[in-house]
Length: 430
Image (tube, rainbow, N blue to C red):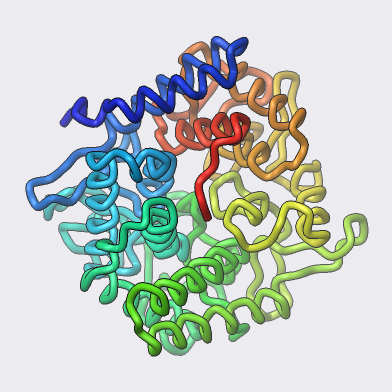
């Protein structure tokens, strides 16, 4: 379904504002206009119940994570554009309806079509495209609802659906603090790469209690090596504080506020006690994953939440010493997924081939630096590695940007747009 109804005056005005801010960057002007129009016109669709369904681009399913990231830049338009605001409210409502259906699923169908990975050994339903449990799938809808409130004053999204979903999210994260003893979640996929399934008959690798909450999979949809995914736990801390603020200011719900703050404190203490490692070259840094048993995975992945994205998520500032140490590590060859070639350097992912850098990671590198010249360098890098397509991809080869994965990937397109807006000094209220 096309959404030309959402090609509104407010969108034209934003594009014009970017063009006026960057008068000498004709490619930026064209690419920003293409990316921000393409996402709203081709991946968003209003449904008869007033909600909205969002595909990722080339996959006809709605990821809770991707759909929130795709929607985020349009919040800039929502205060003055009732059509855009209504569309975003429809996305938020559908996201929380999906959370109520199953908080362990990461991607859903538009209806009970039975499409997707129905053969997986987990509690599938016809509504679910994929049931890989990822902490960030529950973080992103809260973030989107909160940012919509902060930037427009709108509170109608904090309805009965929201309150029921929020309660389920709190319960799920609390259960998964004790995954080994309390969780019934299992996931196995047969005849697939090891990154697409969980060991120990679907339970995942052994973990001990840390205070953090367990995740089966990363935001790449790849399996965690160790069950405590540190950047996703950081994101959970941030959105739990959002939830406590919503509970106090909008809902007047002291019980929800208290539960959210208590869980945030427990997870944050777990990050502090178990999520850091003393590195011989970089000093104290955050680990990507740990298990509470003394094992650590020192790396970063292009997908957000990532260690690179910590300030973007709102967990800490760009100038935090521990973040700067971690950033130095993950933007070096000591990160096994940092690739440097003749055409580009940046962070990739085990989700894509060796030496493939992700456009999302380059955009995030720009969004989390305080150096204006570095932002421009990274914006130039994004635009010089588009393979002449005028849009972003998933990953591309560090020596040859003409070799890439996913020609149509709206999350990457919108991260590019966010960096352009950042360079123009156009920001969301957070």
